[in-house]
Length: 279
Ligand SMILES: CC(C)(COP(=O)(O)OP(=O)(O)OC[C@H]1O[C@@H](n2cnc3c(N)ncnc32)[C@H](O)[C@@H]1OP(=O)(O)O)[C@@H](O)C(=O)NCCC(=O)NCCS
Image (cartoon, rainbow, N blue to C red; front, top):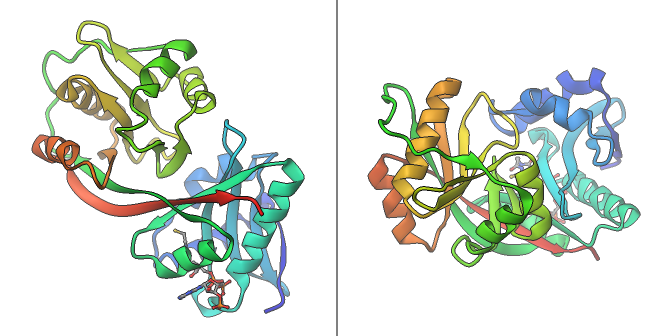
């Protein structure tokens, strides 16, 4: 199908949300991330137009380690399997070449064959499998004697989080944004105040949100006394009035999954991150 792919402008937000909701059967978050996505001067919020009609959307994001994160790819159901997704990926490739970005990554549900297959066409392949867990805060009471977690600086963040690379299988995940574990990412997270330590117990974690702050707080990774980390997350979540604490574990890490389910987290989704070099 003949489509034109270009950057979307603010006035097109409602149309983009319509495509998102149609493709995701009513679910969506674009309206809540629109400030971040539409105001991003580096990575565009893209739209694919068939004539006047918006038929597909996708966001291209450059992460702090100068790799690309491909997100929010949706094609209106009546226009799927006509090459629209392919043309959005072709634009991802063009942008990557223009910006000299060496690699691209995205995530999808472990059972999302269309999304997986499309990514494979462009040379991306599975780089990790993760399980998302959610803890419902409704009716939760604030834990007692919560540890005094404090944010750390860039150097300490690199040193602490670096020790978790194997355990978390080389990705750090906030709001389903899978970032390679490296010093550029750790430093950026520290600058954003998202790496915490409890000096008394030596426990530490990457904690906060990339976006959607009203929907959850996220434990991207944790180490040391897990209960102290999760108690702190619950306390902050309750203070913020969000409905959930969310965390991710590698699917292979059954011991960590036991820890979070014993605490009360429920399994929410199985996801895979796919990455590849720009061709
Ligand atoms: C995933 C999605 C974006 C694909 O977009 P699309 O425009 O339908 O994909 P295209 O027509 O460009 O497909 C290109 C290639 O991807 C693969 N592909 C796409 N849909 C497929 C399917 N249902 N089954 C198997 N392979 C598929 C094929 O290799 C296809 O090439 P072909 O048609 O020549 O065989 C679309 O299905 C969608 O919006 N799904 C709902 C939202 C979603 O899951 N987004 C992914 C983010 S997690």
